[in-house]
Image (cartoon, rainbow, N blue to C red):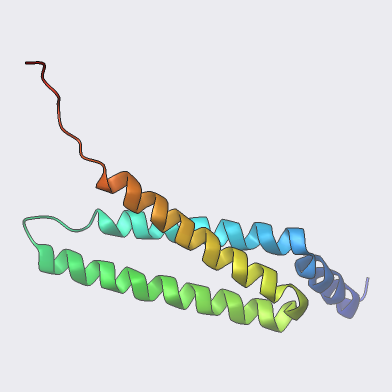
Length: 112
């Protein structure tokens, strides 16, 4: 098979809405896991260092998203709207879930 046909086949596969949505969701979940891992780096012993690491991880996530969107634009521009929408939605939904999960009060209830 010629190389231009392989590239065309991969481009048309990536442009399919289901494939674009699945890849966007996968990357969004991966970026949420990066955020979750970064939040565990903040400790009472050295909060400034933890904050700096979280900020660096945020920069890494933005760079990762920018690279993914650029590559999708170059190789499968027809699938970019679906990919970008699902990427952003899954990342925001994951962060919302994490925020709700962390905000729950964890206390032991004693009976009076």
